[in-house]
Length: 337
Image 1 (cartoon, rainbow, N blue to C red):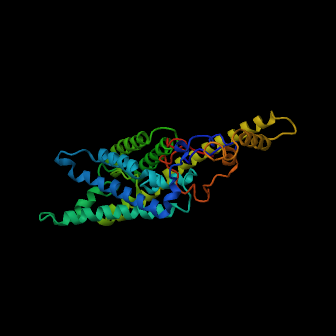
Image 2 (image 1 turned 90 degrees about the vertical axis):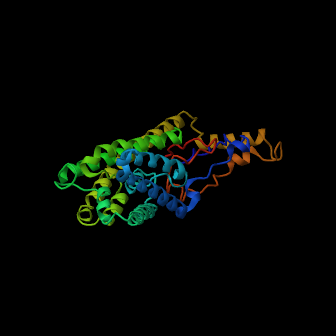
Image 3 (image 1 turned 135 degrees about the horizontal axis):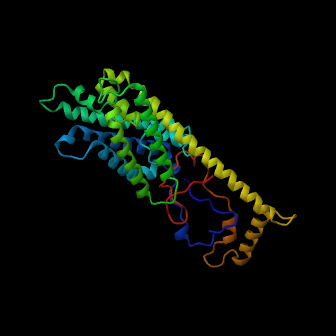
């Protein structure tokens, strides 16, 4: 979801400067800045799971609390990093070609650190209560699991299937919501509602993971059988994320091939001695003639059209997010192939 490219013919060159100033792209924040945003967002998302402990006191339900936290984190920090806050979403985004593979491990480490810090603060909080003697027992409520001794006693196969399907749906909603020209708040709302619905379904089966970072942090503080079963809550989200990401990748490639075919057909209508490059050059010359250098604001529209895009694409695909606005007005980004 990078900004729409500036056309070679310089269609935007004559627009007022106030409307052409580009918004800051994701890669402009640097990998360190994006990873910090991912860590903070992961912290908020995981910290919200504490609602499961206090929901009996009249608060909101745990799935709804996590969904609201996910939406808030995407609105607050998504413009920096793309708004993943979940290793499964980062993996699905990389598989779909929207996040670079070199940024993936950095994102995952940041998300793990954020999740661990969230539960560390909760551990310190519970340790300060004079009547709480077994903190591990509290974290066992937050940990994921399966089998006859957990929740409704669903077996391994059922837990695996449920987590794979639910994670694939979550990643699919994220990829679909953040690639279209819709308001960023609407995209965050869609992802937050999806979190809430899927966690409501998964809670009696596995406790609702969808997020390997959260499952890892909870298992570390709960210990025991939670650590032994942790592998499932990495394997299932990874598989589900890859399924969704690769499906979207194949769709994107199909659209790209169709667009290239349309471009070829359009070029075929040109005269035999003319190609698309000649047309672009003619457009540049015409712009130079109509807007000579030094006229008006002192800036040549033709020179602006002929100048290459100054933004390097070397790191442009490190993390694409729906907050990466267009150059012409800051609207939510759209996919560029």
